[in-house]
Length: 483
Ligand code: ATP
Image (cartoon, rainbow, N blue to C red; front, side, top):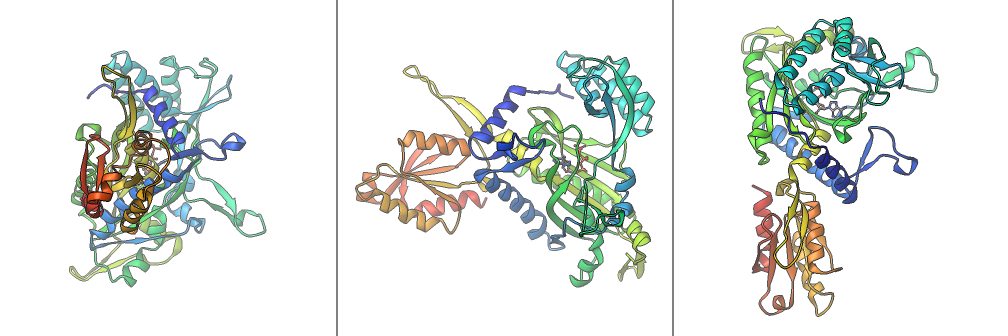
C-alpha cells in the first residue's frame, strides 16, 4: 500500500477556489454559515448537473434494463423501522469532557493512524486500523474506548484525554408532518434514496413490464445528522446520492456484485482519471443489510476516502417491507416458474463527493514564468464533457463589428452547449478567468475574422492557439464534448 499523500494546503486552495469562482458557497453565509451545509453557485450547479447527467446516461440511457424514478423525500415512518435505520443507523461516538466536543470513534482512530503514516510508521498504522475494525465488528465499545486511551489520543480542542464512555447516536433527522405534533406525526428526512426504490419496486416492475435482472436508478437528496462534519463537501448533513438497485435472482448475487464492481470502476476511469488514484476497500464490518460490500476509494488531498459504495443487500429490504407492510414483495420468474423475493446489488455514489473528486483531480496551479517575466495560472483541467462552460466567445475589441460576428457564433452554438460571451478586459485576463472555471475552448474574433471568416481557437490545457473557420467552431466543440 502506498503511504497516504495528504495535502492540507492543496485542500484549502481548492476550497478557496470553489468559493472565489462561484462553484460552492457556505450555506447562509451572511448569518455566519450553517455547519456542513453548502450551496452550489453558478458554475458549481452547472458542473453538478453535468456529473448527474453523465451518471444518468451511463446507468439508465445505456442500459435497456435500468429505469429511473424520482421518489419523495418524506416517506412513511415505518419504512425506516423496516429498513433497520431506526434501530441500527448509529455511529459509535465519544465525548471529550473538557471541550464538550463529540467525535466519531472511527474518525479519531483513523486520524491517529494517518499521523503514524506521515511519520513513516505504516505497519503500526495498519495494525491500529485492524484492531479498530475487529472491535467495531463486535460492537466492543469498552475495547474501543480503551484503544483510544492506550493510543494517547487527545481531543484536538482541549488537548486532553478526558473521554466519556462510547455511545451510539442515530443519524436521522426527524420532523413533524401535519399541524398536530404528536409521536404519530413524526417523520424522518430520508438518510438514503434507496428505500424510495424498494417501496416502489413492484409499481415499477409491473407498469414497466420488467424482467429480472433489472435495475431502478434514482438521484436525490439525503440527510444525515453527521456528528463530525468538517471536510468541506466530503461529509455534509444535506447531500445528494446517485443510487441504483439491481434486482436479481437469489443465488446469483456473487457474480452480479463482481460485475457491478467492475462496471462502476470503469465509469470512474472513463472520466480520464488515472487508475492509481483509485482502490477498492472491502468492508470488514458489514452493514445490517449486506452479505458483501466494498467502497471505491479515491485519493483526495485529504487521503484515500470513500466515494462510492457497492453492496450486496440480499433480500433484506424487500423481505422486511413485506413483513412490515403485509404486502407481497414477490416476483414471478416465468423462466424458472418460481415466485421469490429478489436479491439486490446496490451501487451508491455521493454526488457531492464525486464533485469534490472531479475538482480535486482538475485543480492545477501552473508556473508559466519565462526568463523575461514571472507568470502563473490556476486552471481546472475538467473533462470537456462535464465542464460547466464549454466555449467562451471573445471579441478582441468592443467595436469594428467584432461583437456582432461573435454574437453570430454564439447564436450558432448556444442551443447545442453552454457558451459564455465576454467583451471586457484584455484577452489574456479573459483567458485566465476561463481557465479558472475550466472552460476547454475560447474563440477570439479579431480584425482578420472580417477578412477571411476565421477565428483563433485556444485550448485550455495546452494553451495552444490556431485559426479555424468561424463556421467550424460548433463542430470542433461538439466533437470533443461528445467523446
Ligand atoms: P461514510 O462511511 O463516509 O459515512 P457511508 O458508508 O455511510 O459513508 P453510504 O451509506 O454507503 O455511505 O452512502 C453511499 C455514498 O453516499 C457514499 O459513498 C458517499 O459518497 C455518500 N455519502 C454518504 N454520507 C455522506 C455525507 N454525509 N456527505 C456527503 N456524501 C455522503
